[in-house]
Amino acid sequence: MGLFSKSKPAAGKAELSLLKADMHSHLLPGIDDGSPDIKTSLELIKGMRELGYTKLITTPHIMWDMYKNTREGILEKLELLRSAVKEEGVDVEINAGAEYFLDDYVHGLIKNNEPLLTISGNKVLVEFSMAFPSHSLKDILFDMQMQGYQPIIAHPERYIYLERTKDFYDELKDIGCLFQVNLLSLTGHYGRTQQELAQYLIKKKYYDLAGTDLHHARHLDALHSKELGQHLQKLMDSCTITNDQL
Image (tube, rainbow, N blue to C red):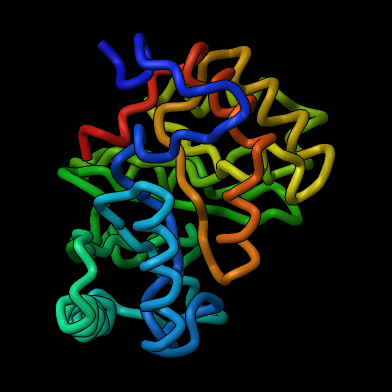
């Protein structure tokens, strides 16, 4: 039975505490386009704790053209952040995966059987180009699965060119991919098309996980939107969201 099969939040309030874990954010300091330093990371983490999250699985970009992050570098930054969180006395669990951009570099990691950072168990968060379709995407996903990984497609509603070819979503689900919705997509934060695609995927019952994709304080402020509570309820009623199992 899914996390959201029974419990219902108060009308107009986003009960993010029901999710327990957030599995998509950019909280490691100075490593990508998220938090620039430890001070900002701590402020964001405190804000997430106030929203009700008790576990944060942060996911820095591994996108070789822009963010040349490695497994070792990410884990090193994680330990620094964990120490700072402990020193501040913030009662929250911090882990790290990565948001892998499915390019030639990542495909090489997979082919060479290099260990990937997982969200939990064998689950790996992945993204691809938001500008145009990736011709090698299915090959990379297949090779990931052959290595024993479970791909999670980050924010599928943000690939707006799929609005014209929605059957590609069916293909991704048919080959066994999980889908993660950005909570702020539900309120139109990224645009109307992204919001409409999110609503479409909710109707299809395609979402498995929900993430904040938190980068900065503006995202944190937007998560306090009362409107989000109404959209979160619809997500809860339609999809089996498994954040609590991470």
